[in-house]
Length: 253
Image 1 (cartoon, rainbow, N blue to C red):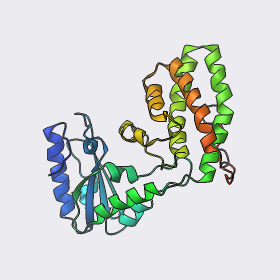
Image 2 (cartoon, rainbow, N blue to C red):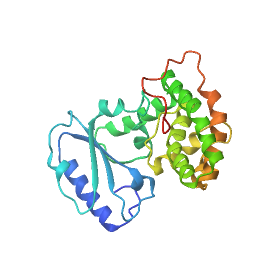
Image 3 (cartoon, helix red, strand yellow):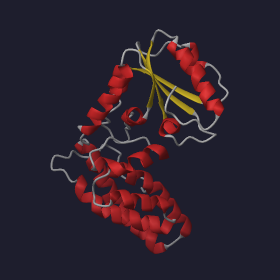
Image 4 (cartoon, rainbow, N blue to C red):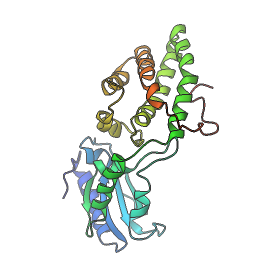
């Protein structure tokens, strides 16, 4: 049926049932499997992530949207235009659904709607440029936070260090994507792992980010500061607008 890797026979069976229901609905134009099963990293406790392209705005409560299943199924229905509008984030914290289409497994596509969205995601991502206000936000964030992170390192309190390293990892990932003019990914581990190699700057960013994720908190904090020092010049933009109101501070206020 697909090239997905099923961690259990139940996953395959449930997906076959869901797909049969979706194919029978005349409002469904296409179906894509996303998430860990599409990436081949599913576990026995993984849910099923199914993206649905609908002909109409998906407000109609079709039976397949609410039916109880033997395992969790996350069904996300949108029209093709609604999906396309989610491929080019323009605000701080917005994420691109384009990665789901780039990494997904096509399950049902009678009129080519899903294939077109997959192609559109690739085109939109390739031409994406991070909006200047988003870069300005991250430049301001790190200018504010770095001295506080340095102070945490000097104090050496294990709990404070662990908290700071964990919290700022999220912001660092988003900053790297913004500096590389890449749409922000969803912060699930699978998407980040799959697309870490997309980072081209600063030099060695991919390996250093992997080292951050593997390191003990004190080392992670040190590596984060090294990476931030290299990435800050990439955020400079002469036409950058001021960061959005209330954006400053991140984890530290």
